[in-house]
Length: 420
Image (cartoon, rainbow, N blue to C red; front, side, top):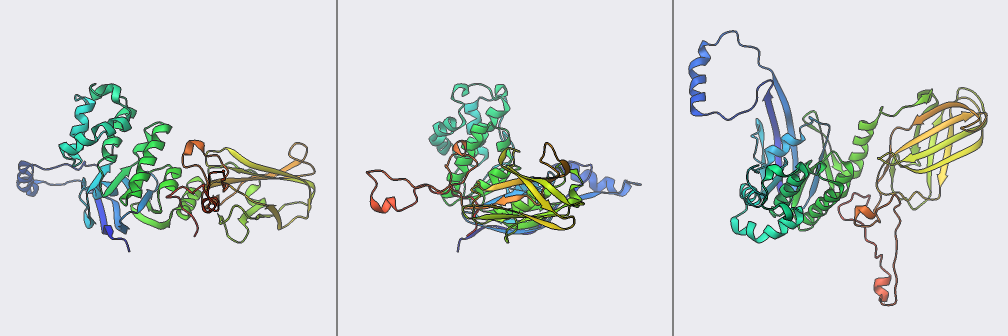
């Protein structure tokens, strides 16, 4: 059993509304002591609990994601773990060297050069001068800022500052790494580079707590997820299942329906296993419960699947449907559905007396819940070369020995969620 390196018990953080938290000098404390009895008719104090009753453990080598709406308490929790903010109640016990990247450019000074800021930020994060010097070339190469090494930081773009900040933190080699939504600033190429670096960190047995609003990043990196809502842990568990529930709630109601969709389309399910697709390489049956208000003759049923970016990945149209009014079921069976792990939206349409060009539209419905594919991934280890399909592959060549030939050469990406 892995050692517990983060233990959080009954953690809570309370803020006074309308007042910024600040550090008090001795004169401030003395002033409060002598003036407090003299104050009269003070405004009622209003408090806000940013976190309340937070309890969880993280084992060594785990990669845990924090998800939730803006204001749910994710950043506050990381600041407490990083010892930047003190909790109001409860506590968090961390074992090992902690590295944190909570805000872009933490510890940077705009008047210092990139070179000087690497040493300054590294020292603030706990690195010794010799350690920084030993890793200096690697840090600068990773950040891709060699050309501007001796330029004052104030002339760097936000993206360049973020790259340099992440490079310093990532090379700290901490036992525990805390990362808060910093990858959203960089371009797509650098985001992938950072994800790869964090994946390498995780493979060495170090622990990562990762906050992001990009669920693709959470899926790729995290084995387990904590869902924060209103300062409390709403759910905790496997990445695939929790992200499916989270995305369904976040996206629910945002899609536009036409006609009497909510009355005609009652719901849908995937075979007997709900919305979690266990095996995309075997036969899959979608069941749609419909309640047409009139008998349908020579009708049309459209069925479309989009990915989380809105890209159409599969679509079917069926003519010649005949059914009576009242509760009915439409079944669509596919020989296989080899989609990459992720969340997909289901769009259906129903027409009477013709197809989608000639018939009478009864309803266009954005299906709820969303389709969640939580399969073992068989894809390229680099995102830039991944498509929408998820197909296993084998390779053979004259120089491949028999034992190697018998194995699956295309390995799944590490860190992705899956059904065992």
